[in-house]
Image (cartoon, rainbow, N blue to C red; front, side, top):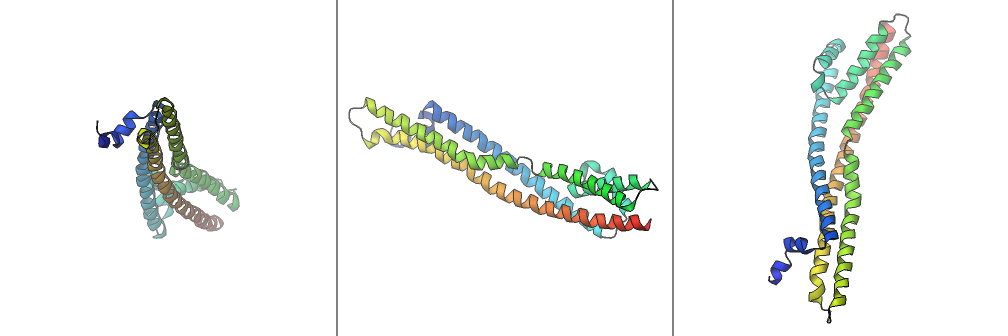
Length: 227
């Protein structure tokens, strides 16, 4: 086998020690998982943003609240997060409104609590797997470094059986060890970039949800006082 073949990436991975190969395999699996979650979160957040914008146009377009509520109930499996928050708040408000003795503040507080509970569930859904991306971004370089350190140690231990230590003797071992660090960075960098971007997008959606809940609570409060 010539030098070029010996120093190719495939040959370095194939000839690495068992521990280094296990580290590389772990990093590759984690990398594939992180890419899956990256694409999944990208489409999930984009869909959530689109449905939020659509419902805001319908809500502030002057549509009747009862009609919006019936639409949300009839299309419950395809509604967005903001529409589900609205549905929960209006359902609780309508339920309490049937109690004629209910105080207006009780109506609004009940609707606000129902919206807050749905808001928490929707945020948990939008934030799912972000912790995994954060862990991959922070831990993967150190896991790769562990494989590199182990590979270098294994390479230098092999010099004990060689009468004359040369750079050519240790270069393949050091090179295969550094591949582990490269794979660790390959797994970490996209995960960090995606986590920062998705966290920003989710935070912006959270602000829009909270603003809507406050504005909708004010609308319900005016209706409660005029009933």
